[in-house]
Length: 304
Image (cartoon, rainbow, N blue to C red; front, side, top):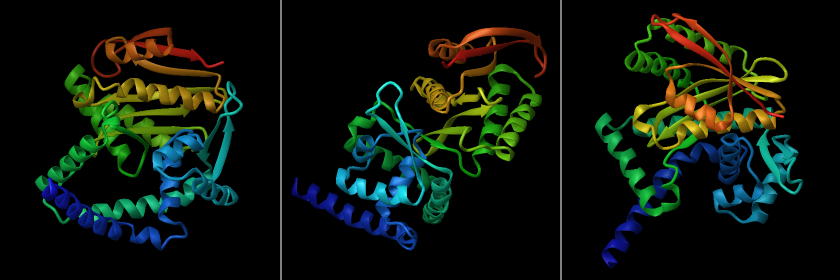
């Protein structure tokens, strides 16, 4: 057992050194490592309470309060009172907060990418798998949700278009016109993005993208749920339902009165998720837009 303890300690020393190198750029920024981590958590949640944030980071509530005071004075924090429980206040980043976080995120990703580039592809996969094994062994509370959700980054839109085109061609025989439709949706999303009222969620598992969903504004009172996709390898984990729930919660928080989506009758798994979430069919239309006969359905949910 003593040898095992020493092996763990040796790994900790090695890993701490590696993390120190990766965090070097953050030290040079105007924010401490803990402040940068707070910004990361706020950027990747659509509303989180101070208590939840403290638990997530494992830091003292008083220390977190001082950090939040600083970020609030910088105009980075937006507070929203829960309409059902006035005692609960959720925290999100403002547009200024997201602008401050972006270069930190880009720098951190670039450093990790630089480190990984030193390894051949097989070794990179072994490294990611080993990290997942450690997390699973030491963090059993994470086993019920073996994935994470985050907002989109550069490069994600290409994945969304590619996987929609390839997967729907393979599973349903749809032609490249569907891929063109998806490309148009993501292009418009990026060009006209209103970050205060629209959002994209990307699901990751073991470092690989396995799902996506979008919430876009149709008008001032109606939002649209678009481009729900879950990779076959990640189905059965509840990712699809979680993505839909995130869109519904986001739309409600922003005061949208109605949420709509457009799908096809043969997409039975997605339709089950929509029905369970509370959507109802409000219209149908037959078409052959993607090279095969289909029955399109419009679903809607009243949010107020």
